Image 1 (cartoon, one colour):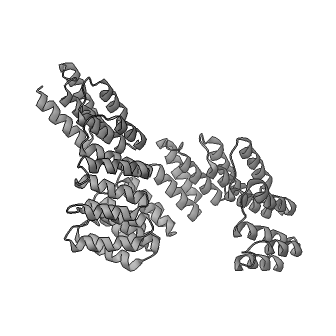
Image 2 (spheres, helix red, strand yellow):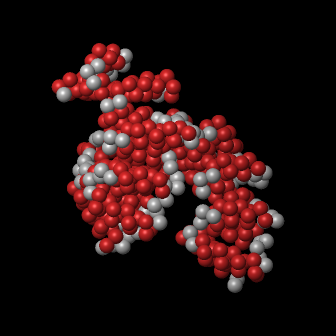
Image 3 (cartoon, one colour):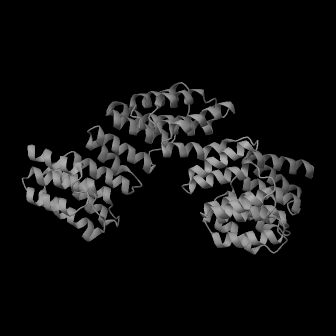
Length: 485
């Protein structure tokens, strides 16, 4: 096989991330004895890096008897794109050859990922010295880096000094302003971009749509929606998924469903987003129907996020029958080792009134986190099994897991259900004294409710005076309700 043919095929494998074919081609390179050709080795290295096989790429890099600037740039870029910014910067610092634009851009992006402002400024200075800062892809990386570090004015200076800013630069500014809690400036840049005759793309709308949901600006969200329709972006999974999530934040599940139905090539993320949106809008029945449609009509394989979402729907719907069916399907898929799925499953059984099944799931989980413990503690407390809740609390502390405010809320509720007044008082006092956790309004409400029902009104009033939210209507209603019993 000719060198030109092998190089062309390696380039194509890198482009489409075809690791298996690329790996076979690497074997052919070794067999033909051309692996030491720097031109060929660079393509092998780049293929592995683009396929996300960074260790393979590094092995090729280390074994190259001759390296040029392309070799170094490809390896630095591989680390940057592979989520290893520290290794990217470390390799950049070892590079003693003449730099190129790609190596600068990758190193600057790595600084942005690490929010390493000082290092980024130093590399910026070197890029100016070598004349690469004027290249659009280098200046775009600089804009993004300064924005990620919170230096919006520096990002604007780079942007203003670049010759003929492209959509990538505008996107970096828009995203940067939104991430720095300055959405209005982001929308101003968006308008400027349009006045310049530049066409917005997926990345332009990503931050803008998210900002609309967070600021609860429905009018602006609908204007953006219209613009995505004109650009035929609304039917793409990337933008469609964002808009489903956005409309669910406004509790407009029908609008979210319209977008979901018109996405042309739904991936598992599209299904997950809509199922989660239904649960968020408390349309649990639609959430479960959509899951059934996903499995039976479209044969889309669910992932751990899918199961976590549908178990949440079962919990909201209090449908233990559906929950058990989906649990059985989960066991077949072998995704039940995911801690997030396990936590959702425990919560579902707790909400459906089956603490026995919830405890069984908890005991079989290989990995547990604080959410796992909090959920089962809540479950036992809610079912009037306060002693079991406190047993779990002691087990949790014994393994060195530090409780949080949610843990204490579950324990206080357990005391409330079991009528354990003195234990509740001791626990409440220990929050700040022993664990350094300041009680919030929910903790106080729980304590006041129990003291009120026990007829210990003087103590209840004393505790209410200790907190600025002691006279909050939520707390007062809790005391009033307790007094009426």
